[in-house]
Image (tube, rainbow, N blue to C red; front, side, top):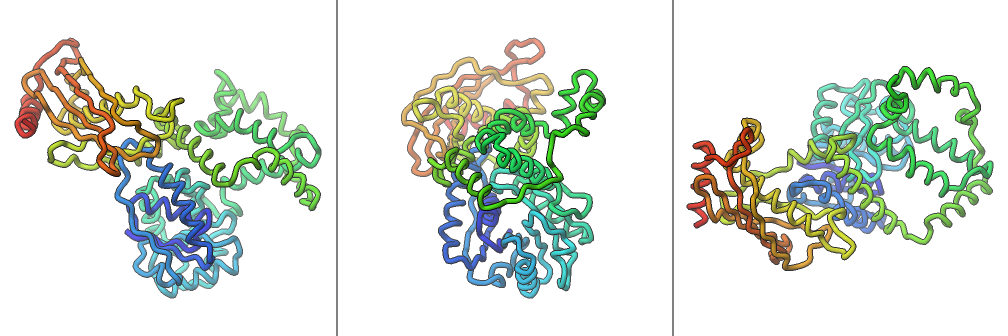
Length: 463
């Protein structure tokens, strides 16, 4: 599969990273002489952060090219994402060039404000263009707003499927409206924040504290309405609306009144922001943002909540069939930043996690996976011995090779070796002894005939 990205800035670069790291070939067109440097900076962040979200290894990275023309970028593409600056005349020019070179390819626009009908003006085949508005950083945040009103439903469905394949959650907006959905919320908060600064009620840092220490944490998992439903207590949303509805008539917001962004107000905002976070470079802030997002998204994935539900679904599609080799490759993954401790390397409990995951992969391989467990049979670990050989750091790609040392009757003994994928250095080893049990009696018992045959075959092959 090939994606063409027209415009390689912060958003276009994020799109390129999202597709590239999910195995797509990507051609990028951007006339900016600094495009290659800027794109490399985004890809460096993405390569470090995105794989940490998953328990599986991402597909092999696709091929990336920075090409000199729109036509070269879109030729042979399965999908085009337009991410040029928010100037309608420029977008029309770019879309005309795309259409001239690839008249049938689906096109998504990253526009944060323009409606599809505005973008389609002058197009020969306007039904294949839709708004596909993402959120920064595109390579980590799964939401993409799709506005395809007046477009081809078949093309829209194809785009939904493609974006889902790269781990995104397409949200179809029901009607054309300026700024779609999410940016209208953000604009409301932004306008109120400008008034709070202008009137010397709060600084940029205090406003950010109010969001990130309070409702921002609730919104990350529940959104707006579910948050308020909980706030309504046992009476739920109905009680909340009854209790706080009158506040809509109170002077709690200047939402419809916008302060003039005078040079004085702009300088005031800039000075406060510099005092708040100016000690860190943009690259350092991006790194901090990405590490925090990885930790939050992984926590949400564990609960299947919010964006974590999308992540878990995508993670499940990444598992590769286990190679029939010696040893079995049971784990391929990147070490996430939240697995490291105060010493700067992977915590010993996480080695147990990795080797447990390796044993689970063996169980699935021999037919003792979730369905087998649901029928009341499984393997329990009764003894584990781990040797820690070399430090393992966040962002390192690792793989685990597993051999079956004993596979007879109720007994299953495994030997795991965790290697750094880059150079094959052995980071840790583990011997693990498991006993087959009945989940009903919680006592040992023989496995089913098919599982026992599969285990014995592995043991013989690995002997």
